[in-house]
Image (cartoon, rainbow, N blue to C red):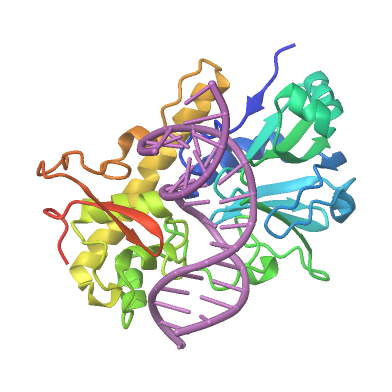
Length: 314
DNA sequence: AAGTGGACCTGCTAGC
DNA sequence: TGCTAGCAGGTCCACT
């Protein structure tokens, strides 16, 4: 029997930043919506806040999946009576196996000894749905899982089926970069009075969500903005340019992430993705693609930043 | 209040 | 060959 297996290729893939999460949601949604959770298992190892105890997830049994969406990098699975929030952290990965016999075999192999034997180490929870198995694998356990009950009498979603941030306990997040709520004007307004360097500021999620270490470096390079520029000194024209560039970089990555998943589904072993499209990230010492000067790496807020001292100005 | 830096975690790699 | 140290990074939280 042919099986359908969806997942972001583990470890070889780019970090699960917003584009990877977006692609995963798009791919998972049609498979999960309408299915009922039948059983679930946990490894017993804690994630960031989830204690690893399957008991905490037992209320989910019997509930049907209504929606699969995301807010920033958090995957939001809408069920009959709960929201299930899944964060992939750095190395998290959600996979869907639609082959029932394969799903049963994997479920059987979930005990720790068997997991090691089957090479499926780091599988922290899994749910058997009507027609397959949803599994979460995360070697570094930076990811998380959270169950939020629907508020009394409130299924609470907007027209896209996305609940409010307050409903999900995700207050304080900025606008989605690919939404109408984000623009050069909003970015410029948010940056007023900020003394923090623009690169870590972009990553803090208040002016815009979903910009991780990789895309922050890439967008600043393409915008010609020095990563150490104080955010509050960003001129309005440069803010407009940066916002456009951020959207461009993320859209390109979503497109590339999609092709990565399709490659993976064909199981041909090829892993492309946006990684090959990085102009500066991970390229310390290599020539700048624009001017040829060696690219530099500095540490900002304990994170590597890659940039060109010739092309990027304060 | 804003900003900084430590902690979490483990696979991988460079260096000895 | 085998060991150790350092690095990677999203998010939370304590501290300055």
